[in-house]
Length: 248
Ligand code: PGA
Image (cartoon, rainbow, N blue to C red):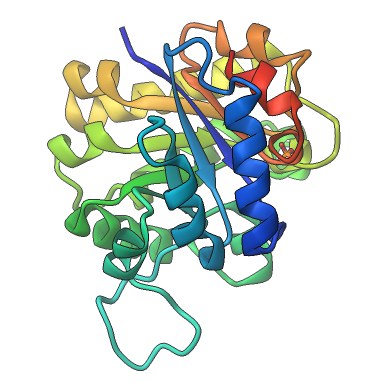
């Protein structure tokens, strides 16, 4: 059985002191109460070190929200996988739709970042998902399949099995328009099928696939109980105490 994984994407929220206080509130509130779910806080880069310290020995992991594909060099403003690891991150979100939309991320740069993260030992959370026009056109599955195929170009089966994929329909992110459990399951199942085509059944059965897009304490259980959904990537609801309920 795949262990469920819930990651909070804090986006551009919380200064270091606010982040530490909030992480402590979540721990005291029992965010790990079930013990059956991996919990990750994907925090702004400047919060990684202090939040990693605050969650030390709890079993909670810290993630970055992006990672550059070069190990070092003249890339002003970027952060390498080794920098993030040493700061205390063990996960990194890659290809979030906000990065694709506002910062020109493409399937190709997602692939480069995925390769770099895996080479350094960061666990990637690779985001894919369609826009509303694409869903209306009936090309969701085709689109998500090609996003996955390009992202995983050159990645070995062993590395693919360690990776997390987050299916995040763009129309559901931050809008309150959650995908229905059936819509989310269909897309996550099609992602597992592509992984099966690329790497075979063992990797397909091992890889964990999250749903993201307006996950709340009220809809999480139904979504996460679908057969191909192994947890969630949570934005807005990761910034308040409802995240505790989502994890439990
Ligand atoms: P949301 O964001 O939960 O606020 O819709 C999800 C995400 O962007 O990962």
